[in-house]
Length: 259
Image (cartoon, rainbow, N blue to C red):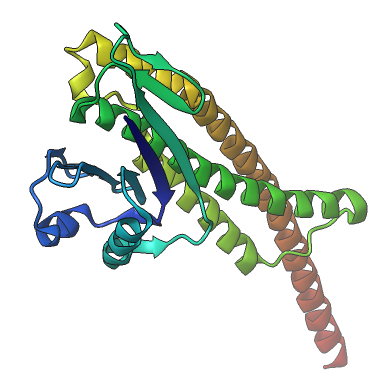
């Protein structure tokens, strides 16, 4: 037996509360930030996270397309970056332990708890990829201004554009901070050593913690650049005010001499 898992970044976030009310299917488990469905009649599984990720297990293309059309009604700021990740669960009745590989995991039997752990980590990996794309864009745009400083010794960016850039950086950082819980271990691994080991191995396989640290490091670089840009802009504004004051004083002197 083989179950294919696919995680997709649909939006920046989902309205989980509204979705659970209108989906009209009993959840296997869930909270205010996520909901997991075990549709045993069709042997399909769903995991929806409020950071905009949907994870499918054992869905055919038609079923997946139909659900995506439905869930987009609860999406906040849809994402069109084609971010997805696949993983496979295989079974081997002769095994006495779970084996985790790069693209698949092998287990003696599949149950909803095991599926939930695998789907959770696959979803976390896609969410991290989304934030990696956002921070790469921020770093790329800041490099443009740094290069301008190096070559021309000045910044051509306006105060309004800089404030917009600062807002974008803060929005990305706040979104990441709000979703720090994606690194937390689910409650079901606390009392199950086998699931706990599976969860740790999957996190190592997807490089969840190193990628998050790298993400935090990149954001710190962007923030340092923002501080530099703000200082340069403040100096530019100060020089402009100085010249305005000088011109006004000169004008007053000329008017006094004239009278």
